[in-house]
Length: 45
Length: 302
Image (spheres, rainbow over the protein chains, first blue to last red):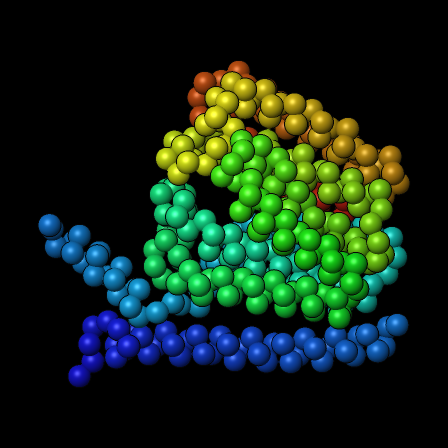
């Protein structure tokens, strides 16, 4: 049975999942950022 | 107690127990402040003489945005007690309980350090040093030291918000020049009339929170006189990019008209006992700075 609030609630799980997804997006974006930064610095200077 | 107030309370409690949402972290970055910072930072970068790889330029603007947001998050961590009592800020994520104070502090510190390091590695270390200085100034000098102690808090603290065009400029040239200092001074002298216009119609809020804003300490008449003084200083300062050769006659004409209107709005505030002119001046002050930097960009692009 799920409780209305707290660690067992549906809302809690939903929010944790969306935070995890956001973290994934940030980490992937950082990979892309460092990649394009390296290419730009190697080519331009 | 009515059913609706019980519902409201259980909803608020639910929001706390269910943990923060992604949007709460976004709110910690003060996105509205960030938009002005990004814009002025970009303007500095755009009008600076020289060339910067567009990818690196975009990274520089991103670093300025993230650095400014990070400083905002640390500010919200430190100011959580006064934010809770002021109407304008009481719904922020920390006072409401959606984000834990320590979490906001960690978030701010990590993003601050990250933005400075990326700026240094990707663009140059002069821009990174200026970004670090701006963040440290906002957190330590404005938030922790001046804000609660002196009615001149935003005059000196405003310097933190004046750094972005200088950082953008340094991203291109790698140094600080007279022209970039002028862009800094423009925002520096714009900040007091901008914030005091807000403080004039929010005096009760600031007094309740114990923040010694000028209208609370010196009264509205003295504040209005000082606001007029700052708008008068802004007029020659706004035209000076033309004198320094970083903008043309179109810019100078626009700057003259905008600064004239800003002085007029300060005069209206001075002559009125009503809140309305102050509200209008606050709105116009934002438009003024946006328009001034937009003119700089257009002039340079043309």
